[in-house]
Image (cartoon, rainbow, N blue to C red):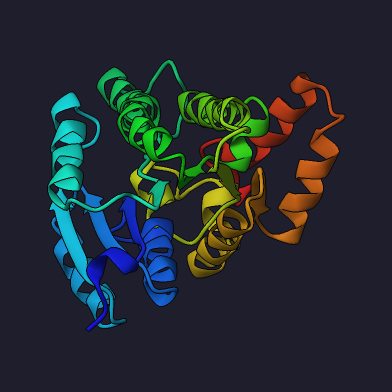
Length: 266
């Protein structure tokens, strides 16, 4: 029997479905044991499916949009008594629609999950990695981080924070053996657009990337030690490259055409 300490251990947040589940599957298929978490009760079913890949998988149902939820997850990590070789900080949520009409509570919850919990969990886990001088961290940002995101104003800003945070942290840790990588998906075939109320938008109704492909590219970039990876359809990648020299006002207008309510029928 293989000594458990010889098997790498990964933590994946937002792992009940979508990109998070597929990231967990990538880790499992590459010999990692797992601790997976989600607010959804579906995390137990996800963990059971992952166990069929041969990994030891623990599941934690926790609301990371709360301080207590992050602490609950970290307590479970500590209880495993295994160093975290890799963590995919992936949990996130979107809110679509006009800022003046959107529910404030929903947008503050978005900030709590997409921003506050990212800092909170990173603070705890990175300190442990720094003490060992070893580890890998994958942050799920978005191509929406590259410019203003009308009708996803708070979501886009939250992902810009994640990208900036990941890149700054990578620079701070450049003289260590800790790898920091940002994953920037484009529109992906997950439950995101339904939960965000964006099914009647051009982007919500349009063709999207397969979350399995996005996760694979993110995992490979993390293992290769890359700064970031853009995992998106060719059209989105072309817009991403062009966006490096496009004025912010023009990028905002381009995003508006994709995210404005009713644009699916335009």
